[in-house]
Image 1: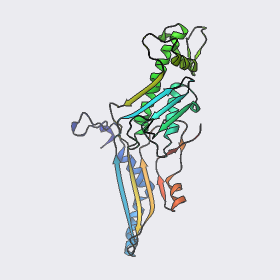
Image 2: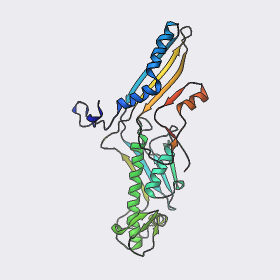
Image 3: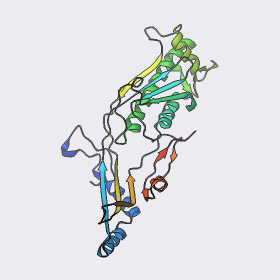
Image 4: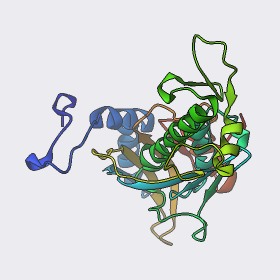
Length: 286
């Protein structure tokens, strides 16, 4: 499909929309990195000499839907994120903590992330289809935003001003244009659990849970290419090269940096050559 036809509705469907895609560009990048033409020539030349090499190409498009999150603030102002998405070495703990830190305007060191504990975490769908940040991260962001809005109402009661007159900046509630002293989020969190000064009808605590179901699912895509040699006598397969070209997206956090390439991992284990056209990421300290 050409890019001009996105967002694309297959068969006129209202429920399934492919929101974006540069499938040809993704394929072109993989072919260039793989050196496809040269490999095909080499394949034919070696086959005549009795050596059997094969090329595999797989392209995919996936859909990512609903995911859950819970953000809880304790009476000291420290936050815990409970994610229904489970990291498999992707750096989700770092990314989810940073998303919450940005929304709550607190140091990332003040945020704990819990994943994979079915005794503590609400129901979730795990990690697949490149979904953890688009829907899992969005769920965390919405929960944190709701907490700030509730805390603003509590802060307004404590400061005896209207909530709409308050702004939240650098972890404190302020009344712009006045000399009223800022009120730290930590003090508001304490009051949220003491309950002495709360708006009428508001329940104590700062704790939000959300099952985030986006109106339009994302459609991540990519192309994988493998170059292998098969021993005709033993059937042993050796992977000579592997290239993965994936749709590049904007990073959700500044605390993740480009990680080890597939080539580094594979050479350390079995000397296979694996490369990636787009960047991946791993946890990093802030």
